[in-house]
Image (cartoon, rainbow, N blue to C red; front, top):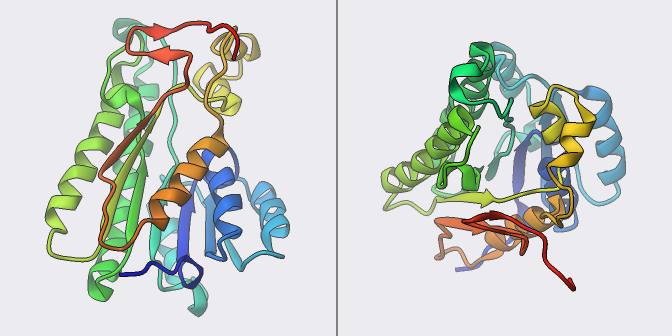
Length: 258
């Protein structure tokens, strides 16, 4: 069975920066039509302009936690974008690295709402169409934090464990269909905006995360997503874990002569 990417449409959440933006850029080169969803309309318009010579793009400026607006945006998709083949659930965040007894409950609630509830909500909206057409691929962006505990990860790690288990259970429910489900688990990433959000805009703390290290790049994950999508249609990549050479289960460290 073949897998013609240039005949497909992908919805990418969190598309305005980081992994989402890098994935949009690499999938545009494959000729995949793109629905780019994120909160910041100005950044989405810039990305749309950059990618328009390569493929057709439709932007949705919406907070993924605003489910009413999200439903309306899906209902209002132009006809050529209504049939979504690929859903890339990338939108997510981490807030803080404090121990559990010192965290802000609102931070916990925001991570659960974004990383779990809204991911599941959007998946539930797209899934019936995939099943009806017996075609499609859901790629969830998890984290190694969902598999390996570390100090300060508390609820963030728990939300990514949800993503891992949700992905596995989706695959079980879809057994007997041609729909594929993959959970991608990056390790340390050079996504400075991710760390800025985590540390509430503290640039010094964000920079310290990567001090002396060479982390993964957003482009590395985007290329992995392209490879996953390009596999023959009879192959499902269940789960893929990616770490930089500077990181192992024992924690991050510096490496000489890279």
